[in-house]
Length: 115
Image (cartoon, rainbow, N blue to C red):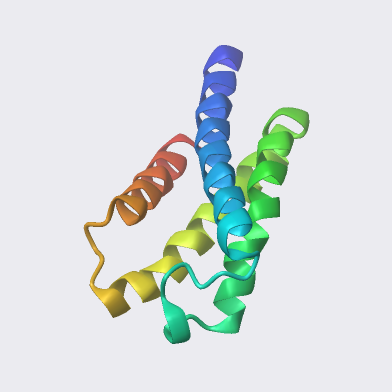
């Protein structure tokens, strides 16, 4: 069981590190409070939320290995909040089949099944 637990945490960490890289790239290109292409329809709170993921995603990665239970909890909270939040914007622009959204939903399903 410890090997399986470790493998699951590695999977979660890899997904979170990809998300971290995407957020860092966006931060450097557009600034920490970028609207992610939604323009005036992106609320300030949404911009803060997206910017905060630059810090919370790698924190979850660290916790997955230093404090696994807390890392799993933070991972669940992050992906639940992210998908719930982004679903509003996806619905607004009818982006249901966009790769960014499908990958987030897939990660949510994986986290739900494996946590």
